[in-house]
Length: 422
Figure 1 (cartoon, rainbow, N blue to C red):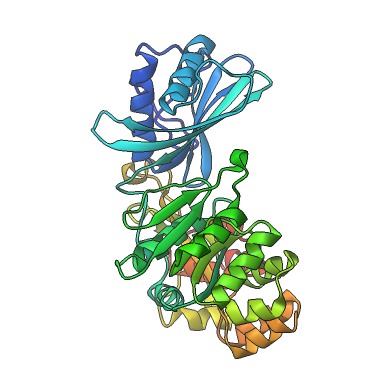
Figure 2 (tube, rainbow, N blue to C red):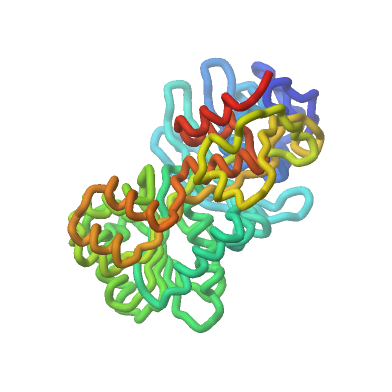
């Protein structure tokens, strides 16, 4: 695949030309494109019809970057090839379609693809989630947690029973955390079942089941069936209805270790979200052992980052200063080099807010206290707010203030920016 000069704004190696016609066959183009995207840690590939062309874009480190604008005839051949590759009907563009497939790249890597296609105003939008089996699933200590955070999470998932929630919005790394936890527990001494929508990675030794809404099989149905298979550990892809919430809570209280994701803005609000599904507060209090509320931050490239001149960092927050444990504080800005493809950031890192349930918090949950009171009790026990954890990542040089503000809007992060001297 020919690779014109980089664009200036995001460091993408392909020039965005309107109506460009590739000289290579669509099959070869697709293979090279996916290899290129995976090498740059892209999580998604989009091939979308616009008014005059077919736009190729990737989501890299959480940001969408336009790669090319192809001639419509060529672009639609590419879309058709990708649909066939994923086992979807290549000719039916009127109805939504889904599929999965495996692509062998030119460098002999096997990349798992999950495709979804929907009709749009000018044609269709083909979205492909990319999974690299070699680099996709990572252990807990490779997700970006600090050593202290990793030990706390390992302590939670080492409990013989109980419910652990992993909270956050879409694309906050929740599934990666669940897979890492399952990988840690998968030592051959436990019977582990996962309920997923969809199954992202095959895990040897783990019983994995996929939701099938067309067949009337949702998370609640799968969970009720799995409980009859004598599991030690159950992973639930998402709690999103009353039946799943109630069954998960009861399973956690009756001897199984249950790991599940839920959408929430904070760790305390995740508990409140569970209550909104009519879960009994006393059952929740007896089963819940912890909540990990997390976000993904772009991590600065250490090859080209540069320090900024600052003053008064220690005065921003005594809790953050204490959490730094004597590590020198500083604020860095992104640079540009070949190692990070001129982007300034080279990977994504997890930032967690971890709430461990003790007797004080359990009492407040059982009394159905509001999230603010639960959060206050957790902070008394040493929990850092998500904004405080993000602030430590800024001050240790992991990310920039701008990236922190993009992910967590909080006055504390704004105060850090005010410490930068012009």
